[in-house]
Length: 540
Image 1 (cartoon, rainbow, N blue to C red):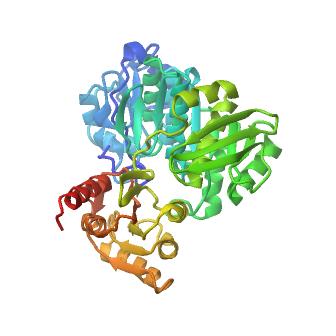
Image 2 (spheres, rainbow, N blue to C red; image 1 turned 60 degrees about the vertical axis):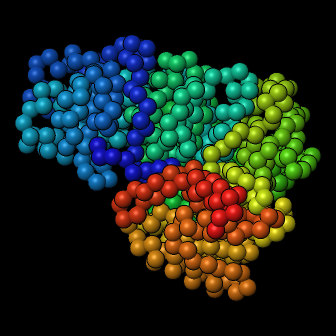
Image 3 (cartoon, rainbow, N blue to C red; image 1 turned 90 degrees about the vertical axis):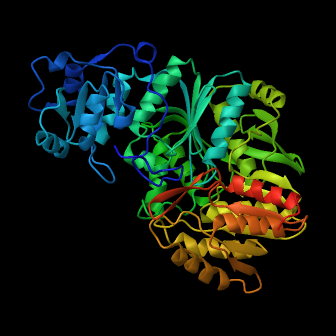
């Protein structure tokens, strides 16, 4: 397949994870006969496969020819830009033992001459790819404790908190999410929030081979709608919240909600914990209470609704927030998080409740977290503070809900001005732009509108839409346009007062800015550090 273009936000449906393919001797129980796969999944055999095609052994499954290892089955299906069958020859040269494609791919291959390996055909390759890959890799998810988090905002932070809690309990973890993919102590940057189905099963097999105990992962609405996590049934699923996002993929908020709600059905999870502090979480919990009584429990961090788990005895100071989490059956846990804001309190409560719902005792978890400093992992690009005076924070807030939460969290602790640097993503949901502009000028004293990822849309057009909306809401808020994001960050950091707070929002951990199809290196954190160095040196 062609090079992936996704970088965390679900920007492309053809991304791939770049971990090495699991070792066949350790990660795959034994090669799977191609004939058995054909019989199990109803695969047709294309002409020219040879008389012994059924005896070919398959050791892995990949949909990216660049990740093929000897003995793999290459899954060649329609992609966002080109059909994967065009890369079948390269896959075979790399060691693919067979090719699985759809009728369109079979026609393409028929015109290029024999590949020298069996070619099997299925009507819809992506629809069966997860189950097929799970079969080849020995159903690795069943050998792991599995935790999944969905929602618009907070998925990454909650997953990092889950990972932190499980490791505090002495567990060896694997993590899959927007920021990174980690197996044991090794990590690589992620290309998609949730990997493609064959990549996911390969990663799970690698985790099993490396004695991982528990998997924690973000599950996006895209992944659920497209079947990327098939056939994994998670031990515990968690729901953070739902606000407007991804309406370039989902037709409506209702469709977006239904995609996420699917994670809490018996086909996707054994147990669930749902934050009910917004209307969507309340709806999901009410529905689940009827459909799956006792299997999906509710959690309130604000007291907005009665819930199975509730947060109370909240005390906040400069070092963070301590809280008590109590279940209606009497189970109680006291812990804390150093991450700022009520939304991070909710994330911490959700992570703790999910671990408790997995069967861990409250006293055991409380002691483990106390020894580990609470639920306070460093989460790259999530309310990541890079300086104190002025306070400079980089956050991934790229939709209305996340931006509102970030600004609300910082306002009470800002003695000077609250300065926001943000932009809007091009070639995506344009309806977010006026709402984010309104929230920006209502929540900040100074708003600097700059470029985010223009993609294929003219950046000046994006900025003009945001600026028009911003200036139309709060006339006495200072609104400035600086096209270059690096220049915008440098200008704001150099001009900030000692008591000011600077929030650089929208990109968080991301390190690539796409402009007209070309990727440019850009890391907001690097730009902040460079500006701070200039400031420290007295340069302007």
